[in-house]
Length: 207
Ligand SMILES: N[C@@H](CCC(=O)N[C@@H](CS)C(=O)NCC(=O)O)C(=O)O
Image 1: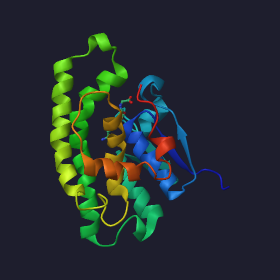
Image 2: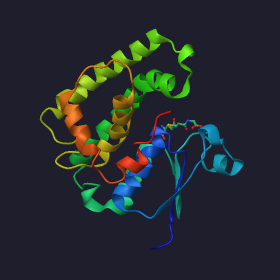
Image 3: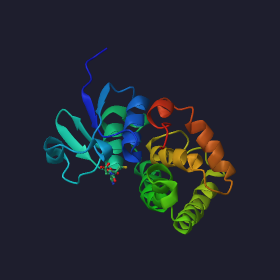
């Protein structure tokens, strides 16, 4: 096995780190990941690479890069070839759109997630959790309509457009709060769960 050359910085209980770690597995990329951020804290050396005080960051020979979705696009372009980085700008844009859409979804899911995963239950704000879950459901209804007659968010086959929301879907389905059923999303998510690397890099306990 070749020596790992692709370095991922970031704790694996971060949604944005999970995206990158999962995609490295999809690509069969030899990589190494270092825990940093959250409970692990930061080092001056890391902050020189990423002054945002956020994870993930990757280092790949000549490049140091942050912003998880930009990292996914870099990995697809550099290592994936046309299978993962379609030549047609329209094909790419249709998948890109769901990657950017995910950031709005993440805002909606933040309070339910942080309450369940990072806050003692006696401190939960039940109204704020319910509002967050309702906003998630409103957004997921858009995804549900799309997936009703499309197999993947990336087009005819699984691609990087599916990765950001795949990570957030794991959290949505893991949250123990009341939620509506979304059959098309559940069907897509069942296929996501079979993807290489999803079990090891994404499906880790939320708490
Ligand atoms: N837009 C950035 C957001 C990065 C971000 O917010 N990361 C969170 C974890 S998901 C973080 O670093 N939180 C602070 C910490 O872990 O110390 C990206 O997609 O990479």
